[in-house]
Length: 85
Image (cartoon, rainbow, N blue to C red; front, side, top):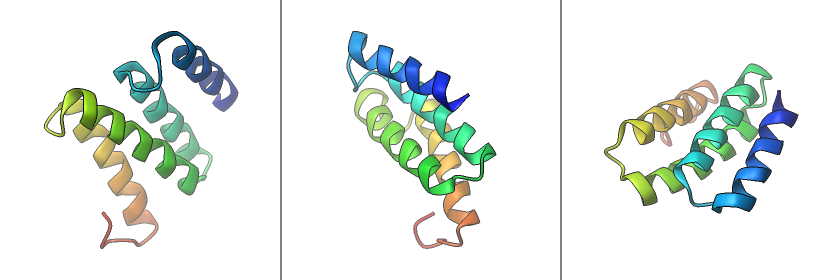
């Protein structure tokens, strides 16, 4: 699944640029797949990138931002990095 998501991300970035909300959605989905694969550091990187895009384009009070922030917080909690969560 990661390979398919990464290909979709590559195409999206080529067509609409990196700072588009759809790219953030794909990054969030890649992060979710990394969680399923127990690759929490990779997941967190995707979530952080998605958060930057969503904050810039949608604001930090949007539902999409909140969903990704929750995902990132769960990873930080699982890693016992409670001060960052």
